[in-house]
Image 1 (cartoon, one colour):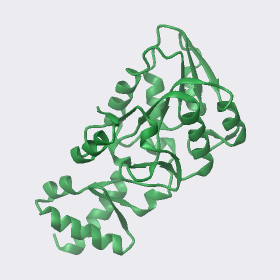
Image 2 (image 1 turned 90 degrees about the vertical axis):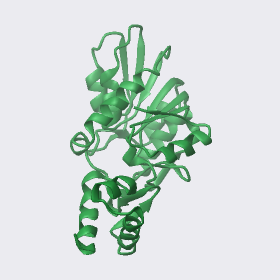
Image 3 (image 1 turned 30 degrees about the vertical axis):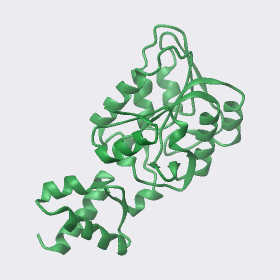
Length: 253
């Protein structure tokens, strides 16, 4: 494979998977890591990729937000493992916030409480799926509904969250980095997430490993705001070690 063919392949792979890992690509192609790093640097200079910790992400990932259908087709096995691990931390919580998005929706699907549980959510899809479930009372935030995710945003949603106190919140993001924390493309979404962080006693972040080392536009929390981060086993070991060194409990499901 010539360099130009390899770099075209790298761009296509990044766009289909959401992230490139230098170690994995090096092993798959049988090339030195330094060769892959040079390719990624060249593609970054051309504006096709952005270098992140341990690899690269496609440029359009930083601002583009896929809909729920597209998200449900990516890394399903990993996301199911994350969701199963997440519900184990509900413990004695009596009120839980569940964020909008596909992975939080999987967390909601795994909920089977044996005692009364109030679930507050900004997601119409989650509210619908939990309505009528045994021992679950659902409170759906009011406001403007986003077409991409059926999530509710704007002032009413923020005001409702500011009027309650939650035992636990499960939140996701489009990107998470040690430097900038948790980020999303939309400031209205960030405002709702920030309110959930602000009004919950415990906070758990759920995201598959492709989100790490990536920054989006609007920041809503620092990594230190969360008692635990739950992701999949593909998160690089050195990145996991860096999180641990900063006092973050990490589960790699």
